[in-house]
Image 1: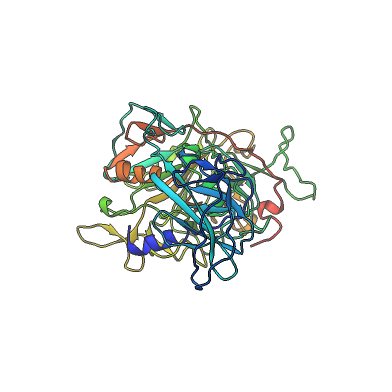
Image 2: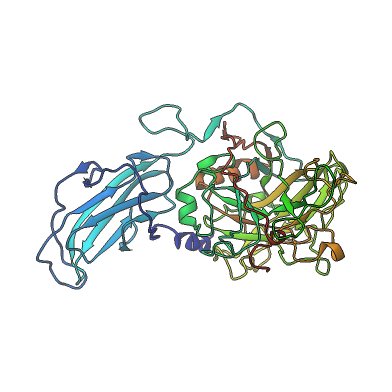
Length: 502
């Protein structure tokens, strides 16, 4: 990783303080941990002279109320601690410098290996009143600890299936996963962090606890996920809800909602692990030099597509696009794409693609518009093919969303039995005069992958040019299967635009 990338990741690392209660490992309340990492009840020893040059007149005991387990797969560590007669604390992880900290304290990410957490209690003059430490091991997700055999992370499944080589004219190298639907809401923790019901209606996949208050710390350290890999893939994925007009089953007439407005209903995507599963999230190579691609930095937020696009400012189909499955569209042989939702006839499927930028500026995990810190590759016109521009020189894995929506009787237009009249919750133009819908297609992504899992995706599937289906990591393991979230569906309000029309 570039030096700047390390700096950006480090800024979210060990010194992060997460103010949550009830988090952390299995350490018992009131225990202390001595230098060997075992629980102890002895007071922590000698007070020392602080940076101010003063010597404290008292000592104190630091009590760990929660610590990581002695051996864990968790790539983070939560500590809850307390000490009497203490003005402040300083903490450090391994050989890092001591920095100010508070309880609870969340360190992330924490790589596989042996680790030591040290804490000092200070008085008002900065003199050290006492110290304590906790030692523990973070295990590699692909192998066991020293005491067990052949026991990988519980969200991995052993497999003998070996992926084929990817089509060099298509994906170069690719990793595909299935996800089930988690839940729907009018929240958006990237654009409207901390604001409830401030966005248009979204459908969320991935971390089931995602809401308007979600941050890297909450996503990375808590929650099951609806995507393959579960806790190894706590990233969050969301799109505006796809909506279909509601019709009376008997008369075929347009139904009205409780406000007397035309009623809308969500169109479910084909997701999950059943025989109809469509692998809806891809990780692939956006540039030709596969060896140059870097891991996606933990905590990176990004948006692809334009939520305000419409008939007068239609988007490029290189970024977002629609097509009927029966078209058999492909970038090479049949590049037939639509900027809006096509009228696909039952039993066809409406397909949707969103391609995220894959060139990073090396500094920022977000930006004012949630886009400027990233860019799309450019064609060099030479032997290197697609490369990252000088403004965004760090190539990262390319994220893309690929959904399929069944044109079925409960959502199609009765007279034509097509997807005619469908819209996105973000479409702010009038379909009756400017349709069809879907021109505001966009997607949001928030990286909370276990770093070791995503590194395997890059090193094995992408850099070796493989076509890794169904969460297969091409190293003898695949990610565990999908699971459903709450699947909560709030009422469709104001055509899905919600309380605020953006």
